Image (cartoon, rainbow, N blue to C red; front, side):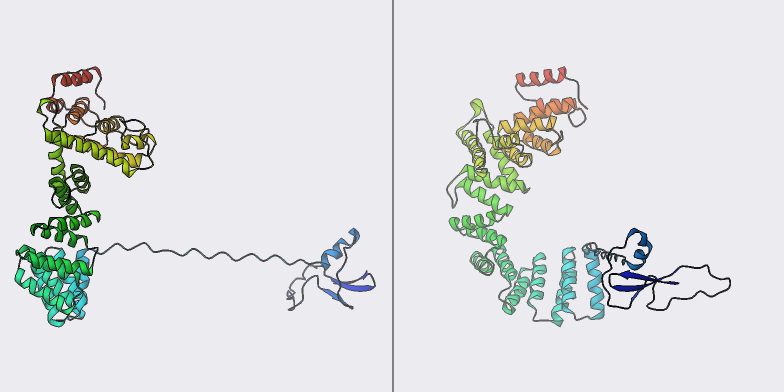
Length: 446
């Protein structure tokens, strides 16, 4: 260690410079004392900022100025781990948990009701009834238990006992909507029309948006001969999306019961029910399509009215798309949407129009089946094939001709000449010849 005296202005600084020496053999290494570090500056006067030293004093300057190392920022905490959502319990798992809870506490109300509902869901109605009655032995004043028991007894068609349980549920809690609704169903089944009307009306007073109750009330009012009120209730349920109500409302418009007679409105409501898969609506549309498809000398006044109704129905679809302009009379909403690149919107509309006997939309669907659409839609879509087979079964000539071509050429399926000829059977000879000539000039596609 050396002491070096440095002159800085009028001040003198004493700098301690440490020079490392090789350690002596066998000597112990000296630990630095706390607070002592290499390069410590001692001054016999107040400490002032040291000006930059000349180049010749670089070593001393380095000893005087000691920069602290920057501290590293702390590492960010790891993101929280979100556990994956648990899968819902299966009915058997629910049964096991309910039975486990009842093993610990046999008079527990909720596990007993859960056990009964699960058994009822699985089709074990007798087992469910036993559990509900056990629950009522422990808790006789629980309205929900009486309601559940009444519902299970209805499934057994034990109307009298079921009504007793439902009435007790309402006595204990007059606001139990389902109990009023179920009593209306029992009254209707047993022919008590006025009592059924009152029960459904009470259910709707408690829950005005109860679509199923509007539907049931509409049916009962129709039986009572109150057609206008019945149509109003059916329309409320139909607007809520209930397919059964849509079908019966279509029937009301077809016959003019409670509403002004309108084939277009009948098709509109049947089409909505059909799109939800209601078989009765599909059958109603099939019958009307067969009537509308009659051409030439066989066409009757009713056939003309049905054909005009389908045409007007397709025209009304434009009202659902006020942003579209109809440039040509032959354009449809579906083809216009397709031309604008709005494929996702176009496809269901094309299908709706084609089911309504629109030949332009039908031809577009056939082309989409055979060729697809520029990478947006692959060819040979099964949903188009289903449409063609459905309407061909109704006797639609364009669909039968399209299927004959598809099966003869093997478009999207294995070639089947026998099936192709079956679709051509009974068609005009000119149409048959044209299809056969077209198939003969083109090789089958894979």
